[in-house]
Every structure is written in structure tokens, then in C-alpha cells.
Length: 394
Image (cartoon, rainbow, N blue to C red; front, side, top):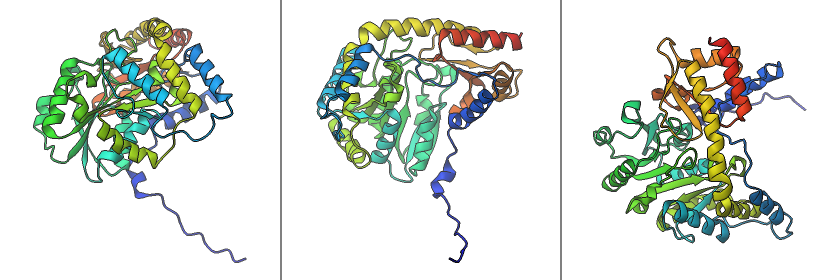
């Protein structure tokens, strides 16, 4: 058979708009260092290292053993899960949601970002994305042909939106505004005043505000929801997730809550992309929503508080400053002025102290002088990280 030259195959043009996710790339380097015997301690990623409740795991196993539990599940989710999600919002936030029409279970919030963008944004439309902010808001918007318009979050404004600056912008092509409170990466807590301004802004400008709210219950005494604001359901969407609040990041269970019309549009997208999650996961997630107060809120609050103590000491050892009022499962701190850029510090911490922490530039230009430390490591690991850093940064 004649060996004809293979015609060169090129990826889609959209791949030029994004790069490989920072952690995907950096974890390869960390894995290589570990293979060389370096024993890197990772304080970079927000993946809870504790398990969900025993009742949750038992329910998963119980349902998985049923011979009739393995078929396709409804894309809109099982009634049991939707009702548990509605009960969760009523119990913790005082928000009433119709489980049949105002809640859509998700395979995590990242999937929700995709579906909401597809449902609301045409190619060429604009979306408002916080700087600093979760990188997926930017990357998925670009992949789907939207134009990203950043709005600034600044330390001197408590990392809250500057509504005066937003009012000065040309918003005629903006369809969505992404918000995330309690905020990641900065740890700024949700404020009812901010939520009220966001609802007013959305109604006035005809923009859908999407609040990503997975950190409500981590080191936070007073969890609140954007949907508590009167009229919010008419123009806003809120994501929530079990990944952080219930120690279930690998289970991929989240929710989208809004009005019935918006849910129907999102479901139209989702039903053409995937099917419902495994029935055992859905019913176990419903069990977790019902049993979380006793085991999680108190136990996890104590655990993260202990870890936070050592993370704060690491910040001080590195000469970084931080806001002690921040919440969530990370600690966000500003690096000393003596460093030209943040990687001068984070790379030294990685290669000399053998500790992996996150440089803030991955969240946007407003994070270029910051680092983020994850609390998702056992206390002993964070203690050891502190010991190593003390040895290097004496």
C-alpha cells in the first residue's frame, strides 16, 4: 500500500483563545518533583480532604445495590433531590423555591457555567467577569464566543463590585454578570447590601446576574443567598454546590436556582448535552442535605478553624498581609513589596520549602500581588509546611 503523506490536522480555532488550566499544568510539575522524591506538600487546590457523612455513604451503597437503580435518570433530577435542595434553601436561607420548576441539579457549578452561558449568550455578546475571579468564568465564555469584560474587585473596596464604575461602562451588549460571594479567591464575605445593589443593577440594565455561592458554610457564621433579596428570582440565578459544604467534590453535585422560565431554558441546553447523574448519587446527595447540621456545620467549622491558624502563621512567615475577616476554605494574602512578582515567592516556596501554594495572578491582574493558601490538607501537613517554610524564610 502506498504511503501517502498524512494531511495535517488542526484543532478548532477556539482553542487558541484559552490555555491549559493552570493547575492541570502545574500539577504535572509537582508530580515530577514527587517522583524525584521531593515530597511536595500541596496547599494549592480547594478539594476537601474529609469525607461526607456516614449516612450519605451508606445511602449511596444501599441504592447502588438495587438492580433497578442503574438506568438513565431524568436530566432535571430526581424528585427526591430537587425537594432536598429546596428544603436546604428554605432551612438555611429562608428562600422558598418550587422544587418542580425553580431548581435544576447540576454536575457541579462548572457545568452550570457552561449551560447558563449557552442558554443566555450569543456569540459576540459580552459578559461581565470579576477581576480577580474564578478562571472558568473567563475560559468558558471565550470558548463559547462571548466577549469577556472585566470589572474590578479591589482590596480598598472590600473586594465588592464598584457600582459607580459599572455605571460608567457601556453595558449595551452585556448579557450576564458573574459574581461569587463569599468570594474566591479573596475570601470577602457576602454582604446583603451588595446583593441588593446587584438585584437593582440587574433589573435596571436587563442583565442576568449569576451568583456562584459554594462557600457559604466554610468559616462563616451567617450564610446568606442572593435570592433572599425581593425580586432576585426574576433576574438572577444562583449556583450552589455540595463540593465544599458537604465534602463531596468528586461526586459532582450542584444546583441552579432561579425562576421557572430561566430553568426551562437551562434544561433545554442540559438535556441536549448530558443525562441525569447516577441515581445512587442523587439519592445519597438528598440524604446529605437532610443530615448535614449535626455532623458538618460544627465539625468542619472546628477543623477549618484549626487549619486556618497555621495558614495565617505561614502568611506571617512569608511576610504577607491578610484580612483576618475573610471566610471560606482559602487564605488570601498580599506579598511583600520586596518581590518583583508573585512567582518569585511561590517558586521559591515550591522548590526550596517543597510546598505548593497558588500565585494570585491566575485569577486575574488584580491578583498579581497575592498568594492563596488552601485549607484542604490535614493539620499535620499544614504544620509540616509551616516548619519547612520557617527553615527557608528565617
